[in-house]
Amino acid sequence: MLDKFKSLLERLSKNSPFYQEKFAQCGVDIDKVRTMEDIKHLPFTTKEELRDAYPLGLQAVSDEDVVRIHSSSGTTGKPVIIPYTAKDVDMWAEMMCRCMRTAGITKKDRVQITPGYGLWTAGIGFQAGVERLGAMAVPMGPGNTEKQLQMMMDLKSTVLIGTSSYGLVIAEEVSKRGLRDKIHLRKGIFGSERWGEKMRRRIELELGIETYDIYGLTEIYGPGIAIDCHFHEGMHYWDDHLYFEIIDPDTGEVLPEGEFGELVITTLTKEGAPLLRYRTRDLTRLIPGRCSCGSPHKRLDRIIGRTDDMVKVKGVNIYPGQIDGLLRSIDGVSSEYQVLISHVDGKDVMTLRIEMDGQRHRSSVERMVADHFKKHIGLSVNVEAVRLGALPRSEKKTKRIFDYRDVS
Image 1: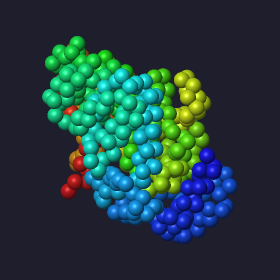
Image 2: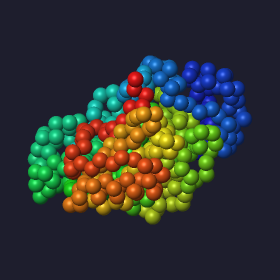
Image 3: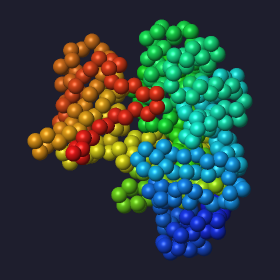
Image 4: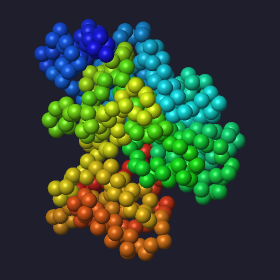
């Protein structure tokens, strides 16, 4: 790994104008890097810097070596453009193929791919992995649930790939229409957003499948850099191509294995737009020890939230992962929720909207959830219980927290 890391630093210092400037500003001397622990003395790379490099400021190879570009959505600012060399595309396909194998996908499977194609990395990334494995790719793309279900039945798809939110939409439609005995799904691979165990169990129950959590981000190839195996003891990440650190998001201090913090990724072998110590904003931990499956690849825990999706209400820090865990422990409510935060008469007011999936009286469910929230998270909230399926569903990612305090 150290040799790959030193090679990366040499390529950055020689070929990347972005890092040449960054190294000069930070006084970086790559010759002083002698062990992997020395990485802690090198500067971080942030999403804001990547946006400032728009459109192709991150490129570290000649134009003739770039065979493709992908882009982040750019919903909160300028998009991030990532150039790929032929080797990058090949390596990404190989990592995605590893994910398929880890999830138990074989050449006999028929894989229905519902994420989007185009500048977004998801659809084409999954397709490349499926084809590298030798399975049948069914490149549906997003939306049109009616057609998704029809093709799923007619082509006898055995694997469903998408966001967890769309997995839930498919599961609910299969249940509502009584299609369980007409589909042939056996596995689901879901990513692109954080999702909890309660949603996972419901999708598995309704579709009769085993699900796998896949991780990735556009800046680092795309999806397919980590996935959990059938033991579900964390996501294996491809540590022969990527170096993961966990830091304290406030101080930047590197944390030991097992402690939760912000994930930082260094791309050891990427060519087109290599990144050094990229702050992902995702909150997780590195899991010590080896998985029960025996894989030599290290493990990453499931994402519990992001540094930028934490909200503070009445001095209490709240992450979506906490709410997932809370609802998981309460019978009679589903995995779906909405948080609405407003400022009324000089005070913050938080309302938690949840779905009832049992026969209990609404007021008793609301009271029970409010009591649990106060006890386990430390905040008094208003709770509104609605019928199962009443909260919005999404074919992409589900927005759950709505903070209206800054709206004039």
